[in-house]
Length: 538
Image (tube, rainbow, N blue to C red):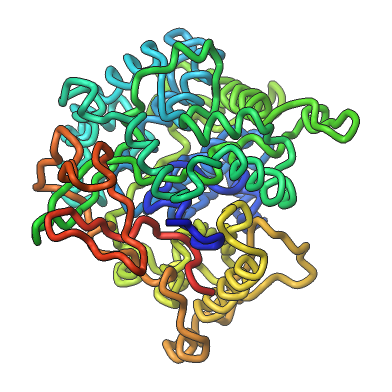
């Protein structure tokens, strides 16, 4: 079986990293009202941002790192994901980013972040850190008082009780609740996923990697990604090799997610790797830099690789976050941080000046029913895998004059140029139906689509606007129920679902989907579609 170009199978059904560079969300939001800016002694202006599918927290971290460049503002991030594993990774990443400098040094923190964020295999030291933090978070999730005391920037109050229980189960798995290498055999899972994606091209995978890199990613602006690091990631899942290659042999359990498979006519919960195997985690921090020298070329070739640029950017980002340097006894009293404004430029806000609110899964279409969310957000961010949720109901949650930023599918290597253009056109249709308008004289971007909500758009919001555009392609409808619903109440098998010995895919966790001329064998499990790509048949 050959996977045709443009199928989008490499995107996966779960996103673990972003497919666009990190944004400073304050730069994307409307400016602070002049009256509020002049009245900061009595009231601190606030920025409420709703993010759909941000998955890795890159936008939040960059926004916090650059907070010192903007007027003082209270930041409230409302994060909505389609799986609880992404919520757990948010919490783990922020726990690491805001770790006390005395506990973990800057270099160790940035290297740990890169490995647990973008590598399928970890060093034993990093795996031990994940287990320790997961064990701590598993206790805090079910104890709101302790969570507010130790991690005051997290708010889980909007999550349902069953979602909190499922979130605890995720942390328990990360903490090593299921012992043994077979609990999550990452090497076998990665190879199985790669074989399913490439089909008959598997033996020529090096050539496929070269083609995807040079003819697609490089042509779309990611020229700093080096062929060696891209091949290594495609083959092994290790994107950032900061030590000797032999040091990476522990599976990264934070990349595990559950999925329902059909086996003997029954739904069976199975754990596996269902994420990206086509583009890689290089785009989020590795193709842009504030320091232009990192993007310098020599003889037409970049002098730095995407891995080196990523490590530099993440280190500087953590350095800026650590520069807050507030004493622990100022927790809960932000005024103490700013009590002396005459000493120089205003410092960046302390972590207590921001809060990350996690919203229930699948709540995008019901937020407008709650008065606390209606016309609340000044900025709405939608990832390319969540565009199908952009609707008039969601637009009702944005204040008139608010902004909308939609991630485009520029760096999805499975998509042809005409599909990328069709996706951008479809995003424009959905945005206009939701009450947004492209800003006048805005610079065209192939990475993000930007819109704003007109001041008078609230009174013109009707469902007829949806009927005026063509129906979305299959991929822009909500994900399958089996994929989007949490697996709470189910016990995932400690070993991946095995196929019968006579099956050609025996030995791998996830069988390849049958081709058009094939039908599943009566006794073999039938997987759900392998991807929820931003585009299927545009």
